[in-house]
Length: 287
Image (spheres, rainbow, N blue to C red):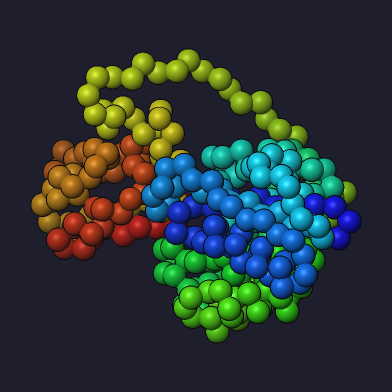
């Protein structure tokens, strides 16, 4: 390895982005490299955006800053491509790896970098890692990263999982192996999408009192949502518990008294699912 390799991970709380950055650093150390790994936390809650960093070199690293011009960007949650500037600073000869079932050719990025995809959700669920609604995809994504970049060896990654993952090592090693074989790539000479200028509007006047009085869309917390609640009205008893326990006032009622979700307010926290007595609300994947 001739120069420092900088990798930036983007995920949501609960997916394992921070652990992924640490495991990659451990694998690099086992390969005889000099790694560095550290996270950046914003709002520390399940589902909120999380960023983590890994640097790898043959020599001791003196720099300790966050990574602004990464060689590799790894995205564990594809909805972040729409709501967060995850590809900012990605080098033109770099690599973007995304956990998605969509083809790599469809990834919209502002530079002609290599693009790779892996359906890490399906792999994680198949190995019982996490749940159907919140799979833990980090080891599957790391296997794909090894195949797409060669930044560490698969042997070192397998050993790092065995030594440093506290539980379900066999399942995580199998997920990494499946991710290694399931990655799909397109090279940098494929067409890419130039950046779309962001529309800058006036900052809304914040009201007095609780923040829930302002739409979640306006304060950008609805962008945290990866799952949305769907009410099966045919079994609804109109008990109003969904409205009563919703922290964001995301429910209103139709003329017959049945609940209607106001998605512009909903952050996808799932409290309504837990509190619904007849269990007629389910969380479905955001599209």
